[in-house]
Length: 115
Ligand SMILES: [Zn+2]
Image (cartoon, rainbow, N blue to C red; front, top):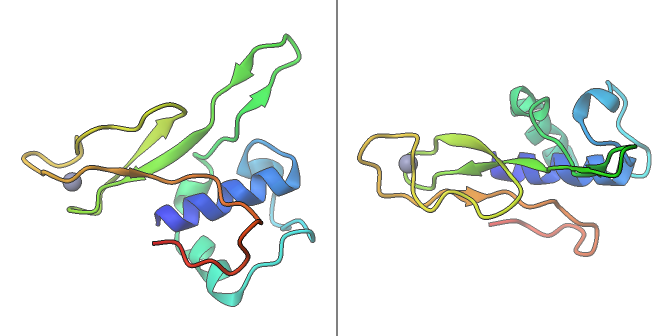
């Protein structure tokens, strides 16, 4: 799921848009996805509309990237903006996991399997 978010943010960047709604149903042709990656996006389509890529507004201010942090212990997730992610799990009471933030996927390492 963190991988789906990472992948989706990479697609937003490649498409030059800031949110999934601007992509609509058509993926940019510049982005080549494997069958597995497509399935990943379909499986986690509910999070895609929450993701935002940082952008500069016309007035010069910047909007923040919104991504997800996924807890490796309980697998719960939370939306987080740019900057440091949560240092401990706040999704499940008593959970000791440290949520891992999904970063924007880049094209530098094609076919790379994210952990
Ligand atoms: Zn947790």
